[in-house]
Image 1 (tube, rainbow, N blue to C red):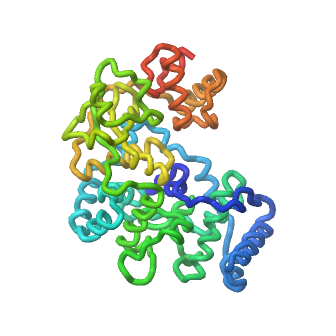
Image 2: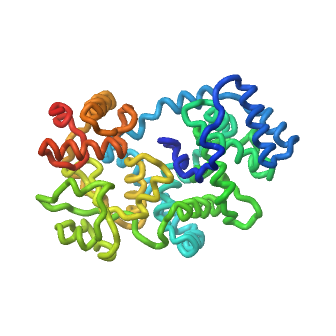
Image 3: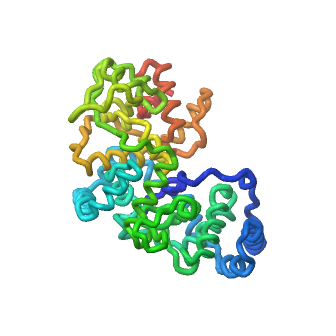
Length: 393
């Protein structure tokens, strides 16, 4: 099951060259394709290869429709996580961990990435490879590069696809994936495959669609590239004490584990990692819902997907795969629907808060603004927007 936010691994795109910061988009499709082909040739792609590759590309209106209709990630954490995490997925992940034990030993030994993390992405991105997408990848990337909403992201991807085609790794006529251009079991973009892909099975090719070793180790290389700290924790469920200064929770505040313990934060199970590690405490649905201590590796997961809800759910599922119990749901207050969230964002913006786009999505900017205005109003500053807060505003 493909669950794009800003497109899963889209956030994991490698840094763009300066020349890609301002790129042509829109206008005539044929002129746009000719311009792409010319750029590919300037970058070293043989002219005959460029002609064969770019002549096949077609606009896909379905890609633009899906790009404009991303709503799944607006669900609150408890609902979202309960939808994604089933007993069947948990059993399948643990079965793979046993069946592919040598692969996951290599994963941990070489990259320091915990098996649960990669298995969580395998589960959420493609149901362990069962459904890798039904959209022609080359057409999707070209369509999104032509569209003027985020061309600087997608133009380098279609050029990378052309290079993978030259190397005989991908065929634009037959390669299918997600609507935003990700390919394979862990849904990576062509530029990341080109730069970071790993031939995990030793057959001379990087095939993320059919090779589990290639997919798992390439995904791990991507996380390491973005700063994953080998063999370090990413999340642990905690209980917060009555009277905790909730304005200290959220992604903006980091303290040592020992400092959090002195404030009364306790593990729900087992013990917390080393006391000198830097950590934050997040409350995905406010102070009445689940609470987690998260570490620097948790933040790296935003390079895979920019949705807070998705990342929190994937990180939590990774802990479940590795033996953690089900989180304590608590009794979270109701949240806002998309129209209410837009109303809230407008009211926050009127008060001078930077919430980014008025899009009805509870992103990092909106969470931070909510936490600040809650503190101003003398409310529990947990960053969770409620109907009561909206009424106060």
